[in-house]
Image (cartoon, rainbow, N blue to C red; front, side, top):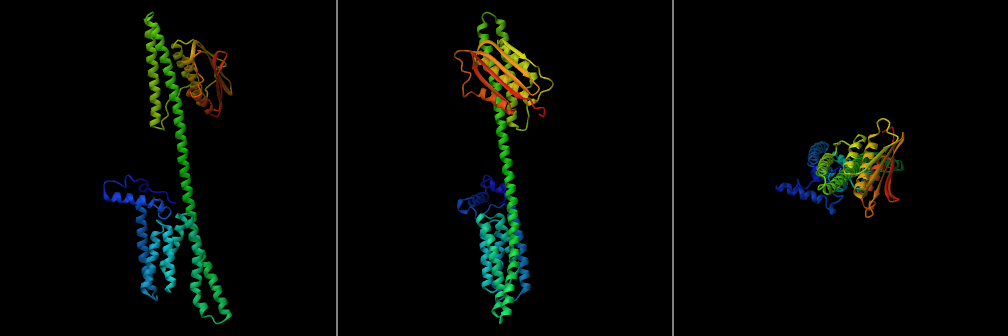
Length: 424
């Protein structure tokens, strides 16, 4: 079935200030009502115009050809048949079931009034095509059955006068052979039109399926991008606020005894807040422009991260053994940075103020990381609903690794391994 046009998908344009727009909007809503579902199809103005032009040309052609044939028992009966066939042709796109019904009425009228085949009967092929291409499942098979019944009616109607005047067995055999021959020829022609419509139906459905698949993939990609941005936003904001809070608390206690320490703390707070604001702006830019790729942290930014944590008054001890050899995949660098950022943020928020140990081991096929810090007695760093631990695990899973976090003998340990794939 054809995809609805823009005009049929929006009622806002159709229900504007003008009366014509309001009427068009009501017409489209009527087409989509449950009572008319499957009976009428939404058709764009362009398609209406094409159908009107084709109908006009077909009417002129059929009328002129019909006049040249002559010999009809009734001139009026022939015009009625012509009008019905033109109506069936005009309705074939917008309403295949009505078109099929009108074509049958016209054909039976033609047989009942004893008319010979007319040029207007060509419309029947278009009607069968439309039932297979645009009709519902019921109309689809109704068109198939109509092709067989129509071929039988044609064969019997054309040969019946011959069989009525047959006087011998040989003449009856000739008439029977004629019936079978005409039936097969008519069946082939009618089914050919129906089959072409069925092929068109398959093409349209395949196109619609590909469009739906692209939309589903786009939605999945957008959802994945939103999840990534949410993780980045959490990492940036949580870490920066943890540093700011730690500095503010330290400055408050040291302000009376050491004003210089308070000034240094305020400077660190200002620098951290500005850096966080820049990162948040980058993330918001990605939200507004999905195709924009903001700069991502790498191993070179780890020293700045360590400096922020140390500036917050934490005794941070970092051990890298073995050191990374050469350039590492960007996805692994980003995952390591974000996992360490979240782990150090948790150490600032929930730690007991003691030393924090960071260990990195860069092997040829994987990198191991570990962050260990003491925890306060009243701290609950392993809250099941927290986003930090979930974010760390998701970061590791994105590159095929894993991260675990648990309390071990009065300390909190984050430990994980990330694979390094040379192909990345």
